[in-house]
Length: 182
Image 1 (tube, rainbow, N blue to C red):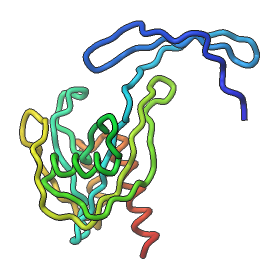
Image 2 (image 1 turned 90 degrees about the vertical axis):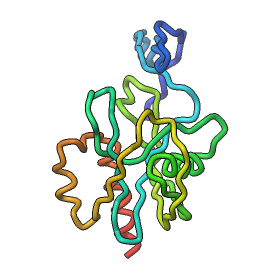
Image 3 (image 1 turned 60 degrees about the horizontal axis):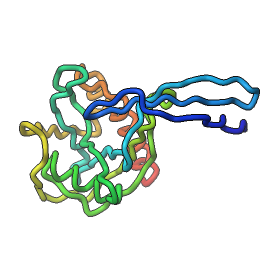
């Protein structure tokens, strides 16, 4: 495996309320020097929760997504606050966005988005043994909770508003784990 390039300099070249663009000046092992730009993220990362009910349903949500300027179907998700355990963050986000808590939380996998351009990761969490436990969230409007039978996964994957790659990948990771337990 190749040795990582040497970072000669890292500097912020743009900043907004949500994003920071960082320029990395790198020297590769063959002597080539290149400047890369990336979206840098804060500490903590994010969680994405695959919640499964006792009735073998996925607990999905439909909420407005500014990036696509439409309502999207997906999984509960959110930021891990500084110092917060990812499992605690997953349960908090699940409670805020769906009104359910989980007695069983299990990390499945860590996913990245466009790792060539972003330093962001999302921890995928499987949530089971659900119970009602709503918490107030920070969303500007109530989120629609959409239970979906696991047996109808093929139909779910054809929904035009289910486009987020993290949600689709997370569902398959969770189902693979659940099938392995049978």
